[in-house]
Image 1 (spheres, rainbow, N blue to C red):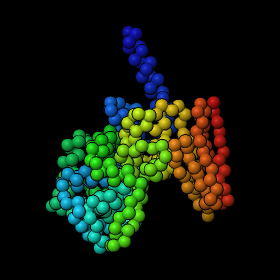
Image 2: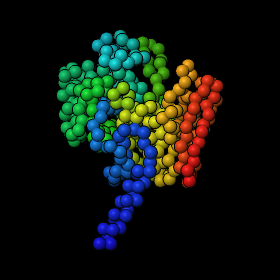
Image 3: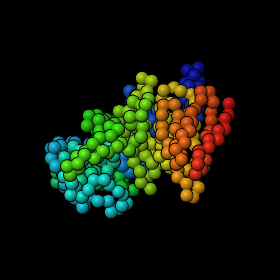
Image 4: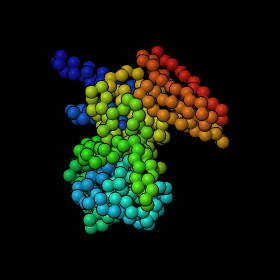
Length: 332
């Protein structure tokens, strides 16, 4: 009887800690890699569009096919996005080694690159889709459907537990781990070196030890993130789905890292009104760091927002044409 009571107390303490962590993403799942223990979850079973998180599956299927990674792939007009009309810095007609095309798809989340990988799969696009279905089945991703390689289709859907399985499988590929954690790289495009950057601004940031990363965004999916991190000697994989803004996604990731590391105070969260800007003014740029956020207004003035130990705080950011004013409300 005492053992059951003690276990119930421990469970309630753990649940209370999880509930205390604020999340803006619609669905959150954080799993400890070494034990498989669920550390944090919020609507983790919800099946949602996954946007460019799809590209991790695309990469695994391409690498499983053991194609020549030095073979030149010509970007075709059929690779252009006609569904969402997303932009690309990869021109039609460019011939690029398959290895670099894979990096463009993973690191800078280029849709033309991902489409070209599926199109040039042995047997063509239909064979690629069949290989994706087999990979999904082999990983036990029972709540996942992927119908194309880019993630532009809202029919590419999954949930937190399936995406953790996908992340763990993808992390086992050295090429995927390396390419998704490059902060930037120079790719030769038509004889000219072009710099491409990682879509995840946390990659390369001070204080972050990231083993796998992939962002995603469509209107239906919101801002999404898969990331494997090491902090305070612990390894964990996080899945964040359908955040309303990039800043929300970054703050959720910061709060996950602090929780995994055992830090008590969550990072200050910006109120919803921070994302509503006055007509004619520019939105502030937000940079994440280990201790908080740096918010830069269009005027160039920088304000740093920190979360102080032992104090739960909320920050509201009001943008003006000349400066950013941070109004802090504190609760002990």
